[in-house]
Amino acid sequence: MNNFNLIQKTNIIFGAKEENNVGSLIARYTSRSVLIVHDGGSYLKDLLYRVKESITKEGITIYELPSVKANPIVSTANEGIRMVKENSVEFVLAIGGGSVMDTAKYIAFATYSDMENPLLLSFEDNITTKIIPHGTIVTLSGTSSECSNCAMMMDDLHEPLIKYALANTCLYFDFAIIDPEIGYTLPMKQMAAGIMDTISHALEVYLAQEEEEVIVEGEMEHVIRTTIEYGRMAMKDPKNYKVRSTLSILTMMAYRDDISNGGVPQDWGIHGVENPVTATYNGIHGQTLGILTPAFMIVASRHNPRSFVNLSVRVWGVDPKNKTDEEIIAEGAERQKEWLREMKLPTTFSEIGITMEMLETLIPQAVPCGAVYQLNEAEVREIYSLSL
Image (cartoon, rainbow, N blue to C red):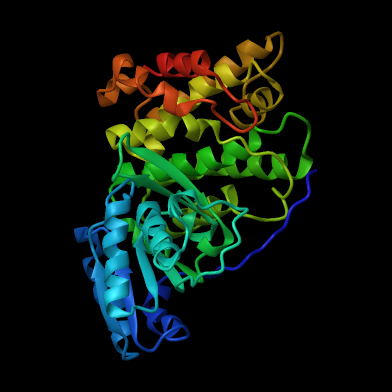
């Protein structure tokens, strides 16, 4: 167990219609102005009306940045920074999923940052410049950005297009409102991709354990198994409040700073092979993770099969009797593909129009891949090839 420093800041407000009280929450931080960051989707019409009504009742002026797209880009965030500076905005509110939340985090940090390149923000940086208070109303659980100290941003101002992972305690939201009912209005494809994203976050911690870590491994096995089960339930009954509530909480359990994952290794190799793909071809994050994970299991497990075997047996239900480690892991990978099909998610790149020729150019961006397994070019190439 490595040394660790645990800081937990975000006030989680969970439950139906809690977003109607957002005005009083924001009033604790400002009496003047707020920038609402969202994606402009039609599904937000009723929600935005109720949120604006709540904020206006507090006498707070509202500005909007309604143009955030999937895989958030710096140029859009910079437009938000300009609005904040020009109007002396004192609070940033994200209403959306991971891309919207990460954009709001970046605006809150980068507006007054003195860093030469704010995209290089890391855990080690001691931030002394002003951080704008910021909160979120979650429309789609999956990324766990609502409770993490991380943000993903793409630099669209330079070539090649690179997806950066920012990480620092200054990125924590001051509050996060999670109403599972809000997700009812989203397309099933987005819900399913978010559920896969939850599983992927748990795997980045679980698969990194080369030696036994009973606390985090036991928790992550439960999180993944339950997410698999409740994902199936959500596909059959997407407006079941208990199911959607459970999935929202599982998302936060899969990736957050807490005692269970304190001091243990994390790999992030699956995201390492995924990030160049979504950055270049603007794919759906969770969908791409789903395509790559079975192949990652087969290739990365050659370094140390322990966690991959345990995943296949304890989570995917593979019977290990009279089977080699390679056979157990291959069967586990196949069972994940079967689950992806149940979730109506693709299992190959060919299903979404991506070829090996397109992937070949991305390999240099992905290596070395993962903090633990450090996959090389040949291994990343094999993962891409197996995912076609």
